[in-house]
Structures are given as structure tokens and as C-alpha cells.
Length: 201
Ligand SMILES: [Cu+2]
Image (cartoon, rainbow, N blue to C red):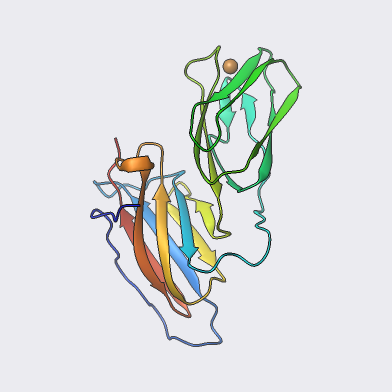
């Protein structure tokens, strides 16, 4: 994984370092002109693997609706089974040539659902054989600290352990190998804020 030269940490360590204060991390992802980047995946990885099975509060599902994958980007824990309900009147298929999950699901129609289990961490790009413009992205992650930026480019995470960690940003248009960039950060007790500048295609 390459270190992002374009990655700038702004303010670090607002507030007092106190063992009683749970660690929290707020990250804003912006593009080269400083505009917020939405639907970027931000992951925090520490050397210690997570103790418990990873559970995210959102549904492990991606619908096909109005000839689009919805949501267009979905974060799932490694090993998750994702449901792909077709809510359109037309039939859709699903294919992926991405290394962590090469698969194909044949055409299926309205109100039918297919599933796929994502066993390997990484990024998976989905398409439909009938509708070339349909794109969906599954980010399969092995850390519980993963979230998608909101329309202002922000994610907030809390409850991570103190110490060194890797902050990773992924976006389908990010101009880096694997469409992701990584930087080393240090988590301390209390609230931290980072601003990450990325170059998009
Ligand atoms: Cu389709």
C-alpha cells in the first residue's frame, strides 16, 4: 500500500488527552480544489485484529432500482452475504471481474433477490450485462472502523484503541493504485480531526 503524498493531516489532538475520554476520529475527505468528496470509504486499521465479529448498522443489501445499484457504494465486513433485490420492471444481471470476488449472477426479474458472499477483503466493482451504465461498488473490509463520507465529505468514528493506525481512503475515482491511499496516524484519547486531500479522476 502506498503512502499518499497528497494526504494532509490538519488539526490533530483537539482537547485533552485523558484515559476517561473515549477516542473519536472525524475525517473530512476533499478533492484537489477543496470540495467535499461524498461516498468515499474511510477505514481505520490498527495492528490488532478486531476481537468480535464486525457488524455494521446498515443493511447488507444493494438493490437494483431505476437501473442503478442502490446504494452505489456499500461497505460490508469480510465474510458477509449481500442481498441484491431487483426492484425494477426489467431484468438485471450482476457481474464482477474484480480480484476479491469474480462472479456472475444470471438475469433475474422484478421482486427477485440473489445473494453473494464476499470472503476476501478489497474492492469489488459490479456491473449489469444489459445496462452498461449500471455501476455498483462493494468495499469488503476487515476493520470495524469503516464508514462512507456524507455529502459534506465527513465520517466520524469512535471507540478505537490508542496507538498507531493506518487511515485508508477509497473512492472509485481516486487517482492512486487500487483507488486508495493510506497514511499513518496516531490515535490518542479524545477527539481528533483530520482533513484528507485526494486527487480524483
Ligand atoms: Cu441491468
